[in-house]
Image (cartoon, rainbow, N blue to C red; front, side, top):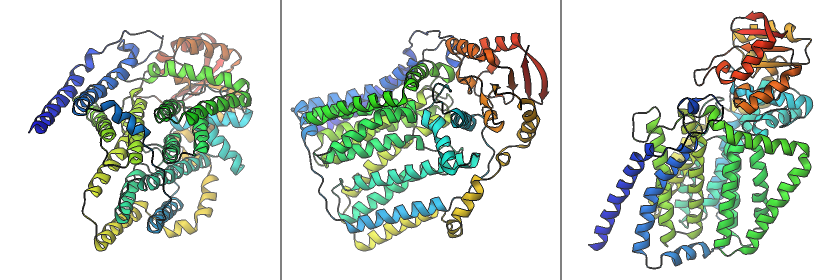
Amino acid sequence: MKFQKEKIFFIIFFLISILIGRFTWGLIELDYQDRGIIGEYSKQNYNSFNDILRYLVFLSLPSLIFIISKYYSNKNFFNQILSFFNTHTEYERKKNIELNLFFFTFIFILLASFFSINFLTNIIDSYHEGQRISSAYKNFLDNSLWSGSYVTVGIFYETLSSSIFWKLFDHISIGITRFADLIYVLIFKLLAVYFIYLLTKFTNLNLYKQIIFFLFNSIVFVSMINYEIGNVSSISFREIPIILLLIFFTFIISKRNSLLFIFLISCLSPLSMFWGIDRGLICNILIFFIFLFLVLSKRYQQSFFLLFFIMIVWASSYFFLEKEFEYFIENTFSIYKEMPYVHGLIHPVPFSDDPNSSRATKTMLAILGCIIISINLIFNKDNPTNFSKIFIFLSLISIGSYLYALGRTDGPHIKNSFGFPLITLSIFFSYFVLKFFKNISKLKFYISSSIMIITLIFLSEINFSNIFNFKKRLNLYVNIEDKEFLNKDEKKLIDFLKPKVKNFDCIQIFSNDAILYYLLQKKSCTKYYFVWSASSKINQKRFINQMEETKIIISGGSKNDWDYPLEEKLYLVNSYINENFNKIDSYKKWNILIRD
């Protein structure tokens, strides 16, 4: 009876803490710091750290209530926590032929799905795709990295990805760039299934339950992302470094002799930053938690090697990149400092009628659910320790994944942060149901596994004709003329502009149509090819200094409904252009400006 009362009191206080988090949301208001950047934050005198602090408070209050309840209900509260981290179970290499068979069947279906892809020639996004392709084209021409481009996402994602594939194919085309993205989606899917396969072995479920657990969660994971270019999924292939870290951590907790994986984790410290600085930041925070885990687990030698290897790989990056490394550091800190103010949107109030509030609230509640389950697993000895540790690490990833959305909390960014919380909850509840389910008969197993395999095949849209003709179709796709990816206006624009810019070594775009550099086969006169990102006073002044040798500018073009016009956002640059350039020609929305 006493236990029931405690449970009721906890539920009441827990719900109250969520309501407190909701009503204190608007009370958290840090002083605005003017960075000279025109954007939603500046218009509202809004500090970018408000959203981060509000998010952490929203999660912390209910979590703290739950921890306090655990403290009062467990006499050996601290000892149980230390015992949880110190408990180590070596991974036993048991032959599980049936599970392996289903794993390889799943991989085969994924590959068949990939080779069945219909290569689409949907119209290119001149803004987002242009950001990557034009940066890659400049790198292809002069091998410059951060010194030649102001990189807003990451040098690999934004610059090297397309450039590397162009060199592999010995050909430059939009088709190759899009094929590269399809490859990354496939890699992500394969890594996701491999992780679930590893995790399945730690569940201690019987054979039939393990296979059902594997199939169900693998289907959930891979269905979160698809091969449709430009489609917003629940998770992105940009999470590849994170899922690699997850796999390496899985090996670390199950093996005492894991020096190889310690080294691989250390390599991810700089490589994830080069891949994308948003994912890189979260990856390095997670690496710090791995270090803490090793210390709490009294694996001091491995914790030392982790720090040692991290220093070695960062030093190697410095010597390998030489001068570019300095540009990388400068570029990265500039983005961290300025980008929230460049494109930030104020986070909707949870449980309100603000735009995207329901989606944001759903995601944060899912993350909170992951946290509560994780805390409970520390004090619950009924579950395999290694499985619980991996779940807790997944919960940390879920917490970090929402930080991507806090920089710009519109619908697509919030949706893109829902993947990890969803798979984390899917893993727990499927495990929980299977664990307390009665033994599954052969008949029920065959029925359920067959249904899931059929579902997977149906979702995979396998086309044998496409598979057998893949090489031929790919060859045609990568050699499609770039104009096939343009709309009618863009085709006419390129025909109009090409003779106008023919005699110029470089051009400058003052437009959201970043793709024009690539389509006109010209590199940017400045490192600010993606002009929208150069909104701070510092960057605008650097932009102007680098334009001293610029002789031609293409302005106007696509207008956006998601931010302020470039003329307002880059007011210093716009004034400089108006004072030093004259319009000599135009085509519809685009203008050609020549220096006086």
